[in-house]
Image 1 (cartoon, helix red, strand yellow):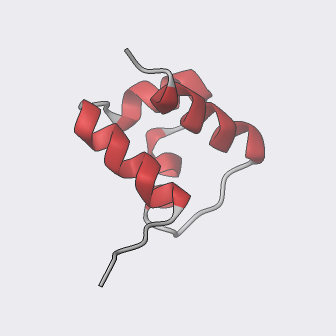
Image 2 (cartoon, rainbow, N blue to C red):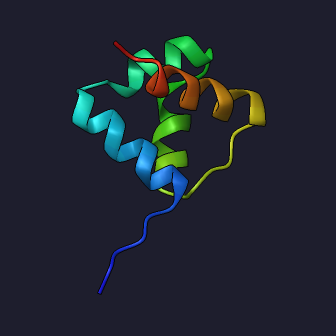
Length: 62
């Protein structure tokens, strides 16, 4: 059986794999780290601007 992940789960796994702290992403996205934590847990849906910044930071992390 093949596991399927949501886009959100994929970004969270990538963030963790790269060792990126939520505080780093939150600073880039100009929001509180708790918002991103709640977003990753499916308990909060931030604005598209914050979500895009979250994805951009992780995708372009070096």
